[in-house]
Image (cartoon, rainbow, N blue to C red; front, side):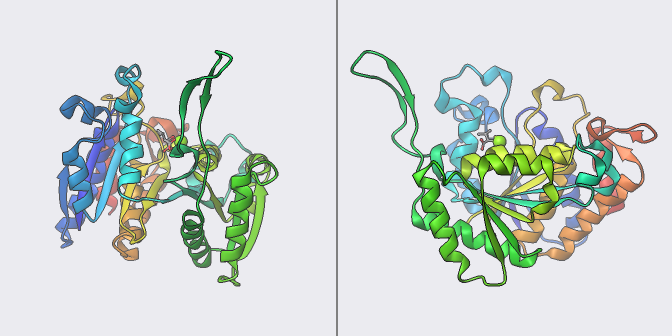
Length: 354
Ligand code: IPM
Ligand code: MG
């Protein structure tokens, strides 16, 4: 298992260090794990003047999987756009062809009170959001800021999806649904956007190959509402890049603990980039208070999807559950009566439980 490790910025290095402890513990158990480090985001800019330096690209292309912390920081906010940390993230997604972004929203029984919704609405919640990650208005050309004939300036972007892009992510969605509760809800804005009308047509066509999966369609505004009204109606949500960006943040908050949510971004061969759903939290960087569990759970997803080691994935997930059952909490998921610990101590606790 050759893993490229990209700690990134802010709390990235701290949380990745905890995930690396878990990987090293697994190596101690006989797994052949090789970790190689490189820079992404602001760290790439600082080291090489580029948020996705060539050395990082080379390593990421050669590796079987990539583990990423987080990117971004105040000090980079005023750089020209191509040099900003987020561009590193978008370029590695595109460069590695990571079109299928899996973002689970899972409520742990131990953390049901962390949600801002009533416990009965979210207890047992288990949604998988599948976000298309390399197309849509994120990458569409032309884009820019132009001056119109009347002298007024105008910002513009282009939304488009080609048939092959929709088809391949739809297949991933149906296959994920087959392994779960066999319900797939495709989210679009087909009442307004031609891109979405086309999306709906192609997804409906792919559904013919998966008669066991119940397909439904929902407009994105309604989906945003349903997620806070009755989130348990969803099993798998399939959607495009921009809608998925927004809905996955919303869904993560249903769980109350964005510090717990991992993600996987996969290519056509299950090579993947694994990262926590949360950001680089520069305000708490270096304070040893960040929650490393989302990053550790990202390693579990890596074992499941890239290395097809469901056994190890579950071992990691069970270790995390055990730590929660022991009452150990980082600040973001702390409630009265529990024991508050730091980032490194949380990593040690998971390794011990493992
Ligand atoms: C995400 C983030 C990124 C995105 C940003 C940082 C470019 O919000 O992974 O959801 O918009 O995809
Ligand atoms: Mg986002």
